[in-house]
Image 1 (cartoon, each protein chain N blue to C red):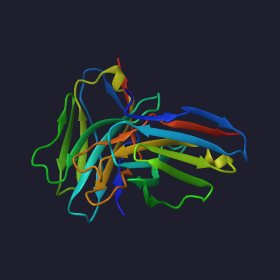
Image 2: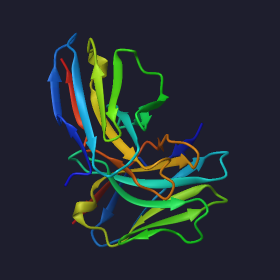
Image 3: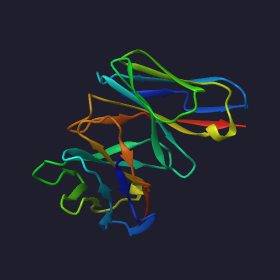
Image 4: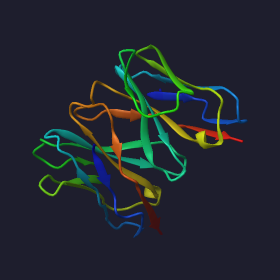
Length: 114
Length: 114
């Protein structure tokens, strides 16, 4: 079974600053995918970024980048130039390549201060 | 156009009632899922269908019965609702095992049992 760990239950960040959300995972599968989702107070799950375990480069999507360190089994999300609208809960998730089940971490709540 | 749409968004009902949640996706995906998010925001898979065939059936009370009439639809019927069923239920879809990303969630249905 896959285990996803997000050790930061809550974080505060100043507007326009960068923030890093930690995620570590435990799997014996050699091939897998890593996801980050944003859940604002309105409740929907918004896909942010994806990283495949064999991707050579770290994924980036606009202000989001994924700091993937395969040997350490970590997939930290970096949000640059934080905006007030970034205040939300963020979930890290992992899926083995031969599986359909997405396993989630417990989430990190980010609050952006003006 | 909403990619994965769920109805209703909110559902308040009394204990013992039977209710259904509907989900439709227009992404051309072949796999659909039901996830449950509990009061602590933890997300866990309940069921998955691939091309109308049930492929994941986690430890869920048999009061919960999914039905997939076609690849684009997945409904969840819940019999004899209990207080502990109160949660947010998310539908999701993917193309196969989502290698390369593309695991999309609906906006959720908040079920409150009173």
